Length: 209
Image 1: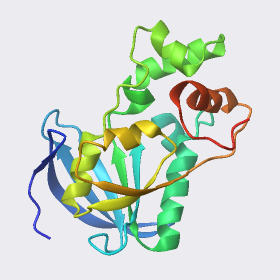
Image 2 (image 1 turned 45 degrees about the vertical axis):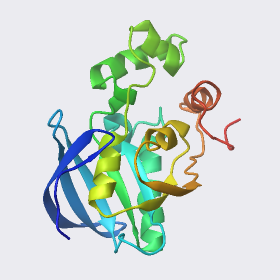
Image 3 (image 1 turned 60 degrees about the vertical axis):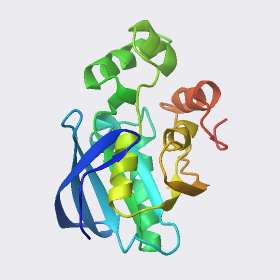
Image 4 (image 1 turned 30 degrees about the vertical axis):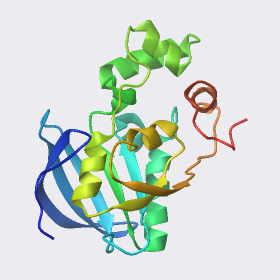
């Protein structure tokens, strides 16, 4: 595949590396991208041939250091990441785009830890951001759309519970043929977090109490 920088939703991405990465879920090809606007680096894990044919499974996953790497159970991020990789592995085909700079819905790791402390004294995740004078959710998905377009994807089955991701891709030329739920069972530590996602942020969480 010939690769060039592409602009989707006015976000340009540069593909600059690719390599096979064996995982516990099978072999992926990791594609490294750089956002031309801010220099942030992102990664797409690709399994199988995702150009043409039936729409592949796709996950746009927001970076979460605490949940993805450090095993926090205050959120469902790490479990969603692993569930998405497993679903792609089961089908033998799909893409997971790991979006950097999305920590804490865009507020960064430091403010996220402060938000945790505020949650421990009674605020929910929305209120904890507002108490710091920060946006509730400042993430955008133009970079993700640019990466998917560069990979040759024109249509997809998007793994998400978040309507903002559907809306965030609406201005691109990518077709979402199906929303695939990726719900995780709650635990006492993340129950209020999931309820806030559902009740205040509009996430589709049928399993939440």
